[in-house]
Image (cartoon, rainbow, N blue to C red; front, side, top):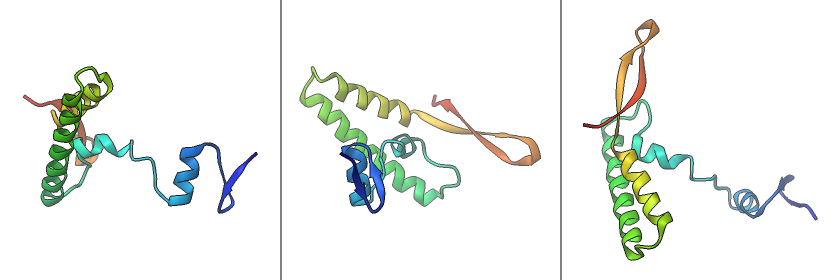
Length: 105
């Protein structure tokens, strides 16, 4: 049996919820929360870093609640490593800055 929402076929439960409630998969935005996005202002960067720190604290608390929960620890570790990456701007062709990433000191 096929399931349709607004003339679009939903192949699984997540797709059905996405179509029905109108939200996207948040997973691709997880790294950008910690790394940032090109062209963000200083105010946007400060707000993003504040939220990223709060999310990292929550992930570490969740991991600390159950020391045997390997997934929670890996999520916290991944977030901490993403916070440790800073943008390094190099000059590319045409004088435009190309963002690259390097580990923070």
